[in-house]
Length: 316
Ligand SMILES: [Mg+2]
Figure 1 (tube, rainbow, N blue to C red):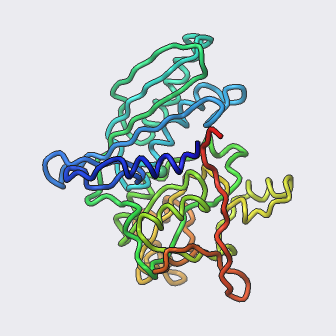
Figure 2: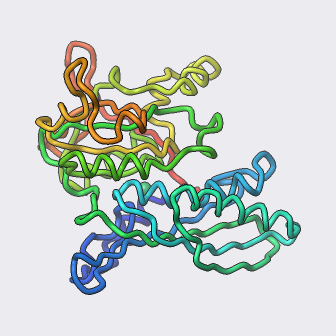
């Protein structure tokens, strides 16, 4: 089974509902409580041993931390403040009490960093590997940022540096919540998501939701030093790692070109708000197009096909 096929079927099988202002398929779900001022955003996410972490290598604490941070990264994706977290844990029967405590402490450490309480959960024990399900309730910037508002000629930007997270960052990344809230305050952002499966897979998802296309300049991609390290070992260009590797957990967003001077002020001028303090690089990597296809910009400005790559969970 391919995850994308199943997700496409799911979104067609769930009817639209006036109480649900954001269609299925964004980073979080939303439900209106009484008015649009009172919007609850919801997320549920699984983290599995041997899929999202490996207990042969990673500690229980590191696994717990990652499980919660994956959910918090989706809160960042929608520029929403996490208000509560619930956990559902299936512990392997080989785990002792110290393991369970360490797992919880990892979850708690991640949530506390964003002042988010863990309000409840459920634990069971079985004869299979560890599975941690994290549900997050968020309270939103009004209106929340979604994947569906990108417009032709908008600039496409990413935070941080991309590629090579498999060398360790996929366990230790910091959800970009503070940066997302700041960006939402300062910029007329038209769409946003977090990069979990890699730009090569995630940008087409954003474009599909916004019914637009994109041209990306690969030479503009902010390449993480981990991607360079991987490249030396596997001979795959570092730029391709930046484009295709999963689990960067950085933000991908769009805004009108006219807003770019806010992010890139003239030399000598200060960055607005807390951007200088947050000190996370932001890079323009391309432009939204009206045609619904995606391309890479080659040398001499020719349009190259979009690479079919990225990280898709699959049971094939
Ligand atoms: Mg996401």
